[in-house]
Image 1 (cartoon, one colour):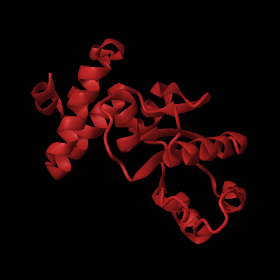
Image 2 (cartoon, one colour):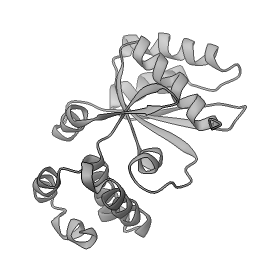
Image 3 (spheres, helix red, strand yellow):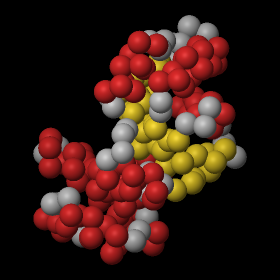
Image 4 (cartoon, helix red, strand yellow):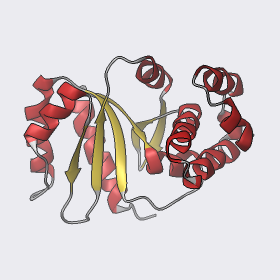
Length: 186
C-alpha cells in the first residue's frame, strides 16, 4: 500500500520530535481518521510540550528535512511563550503541520498521560486517546456548533467502541460540562 504525502511528513516530523525528546500526540482530523471514519483533512495537528531551547534545533531540522519548507522561528518562540500555535508547510505536497504548544493545564496533563501508540508505516506514533478525542470534538461542537465535530465524535465512538473506556469518558464529560452532548452520540 502506498504511503500518502501526509503520512510521509508525519513520520518524518515524529522522528524529529522523538530525536529532540519533545513530547507530542496527534489530534484533529488525522486522529479522527485513525480512531473513527477516514475523512479528508488538509493538515496534521500535533500537540507538543516544548521549551524555548528546543526552537532552533527543531526549526533547523525541519528546514533541512524539506528544502524550501516554511517555518518561522519567531513564531515558534512566540507559540512556546504564549502556549499558542505555529506551523510548518511542505511546499512540495502542500501538507501543513500545525503544532499546538501546551502548558500544564489539567486537560493537557490528562491527555498526555492517556495518549496511545498507533503504528503508521512501521513507525510508532503517539495519538490522542479515542476518549480524549471524543471530548475534544464535543468541546469544539459546544464552541462552534458545527455538526462536523459531533459526527467526528460519533464515528470515533462507533468504530473504536471496544477500545473506549466509557467510565473515563463519562467521568470527564461530567467534569467538563459535556454530558448533554455526549448523550447525543451515545
